[in-house]
Amino acid sequence: MRKIGLLAALVPLLVTGLAVGSDAQTGGGVHAVPVASGLDGAVGFTFTPSGRLVYVERNTGWIRFRNLQTGNDHRVYRVTHIDSNGERGALGIELHPDWPERPFVYVYATRNTSSGLRNQVLRIRVEGGSGVGVLRVLTVAAGPASNHNGGRILFGPDRKLYVVIGDNAQPSNAQDLSANFRGKILRVNPDGSIPATNPFGTRVWAFGIRNSIGFAFDPRNGRLWESENGPSCNDEMNRIVRGANHGWGPSENCPNTNNSGPAPRIAPRYTFPDTVGLTGMAFCDACGLGSGFDGDILVGAVNDGRIRRFDLNAARTGFDAGPILELDRPGPVLSLEVGPGRRVFFSDFGAVYRLVPA
Image (cartoon, rainbow, N blue to C red):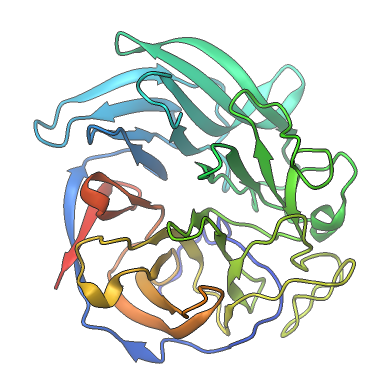
């Protein structure tokens, strides 16, 4: 296994598994075609409806737009006071679902503030190609540990913004439902306010989360799936349940990492015996890789540089097959996103690639 230290914990961990295994199958494979290179720490990226690449530099905080046809790359706004120690930094980026009518870019970043180190979600208004106004949508204490920082943000089909924050290497955070947002998946309105339909009357949507930078919504039913890293076992594929305990917490141990907090505890749909460092996740919805991929989940990994595929069952609650190895590369796989033409893209630290049939 090729071990990548920096982001080896930027991914998740959760509970015990219904299935356990390694790469039992090898698929027909896919190829990676670079569409943007020479990038500086492009952990988080997305696309405008017209197909422009939107990404944020992890270390500098620069939000950049790139025309993939011309290669023109434009700096839009710099998120300042970034702390990129360990697994911190500018990690997630998303556009308002009504872009460009609502020209807002959202960024998840760890920042040094007058109130101390904070993980924040900022909303930047873009006019004339530049950021002109900033709203702090969310702010959560970060540290003292520099790992298990989370960082994925994504609008759901309900038009709410979902945010994952890791447990900051303190498992008890994941079970603390007071004012502690670490070790949780959060759900907020686009302005940061609390949706009336949240389960606890707070921003918390689900708890018992170790650390993650990968989740995606099933385009066929809107269910939320998440990838998560274990401590020394049980990297997991999880179907997230509203208001549910997903089991991570202070009673951690291997091979059972689903042993903390109140029952019932939601078990993962699949667990890896070894920590491959699961990262980004995306659904193939007529994504151009062939009918065998349609409706399946693709998930990346930072430790071994692989992209694996899971074939969902008819009820889309678990897996009929997987993990199926589809791509094996020498460097890490970070975020996965669906972009122009429903194609699936992924990033490493220096480039963004499109998946194409082998």
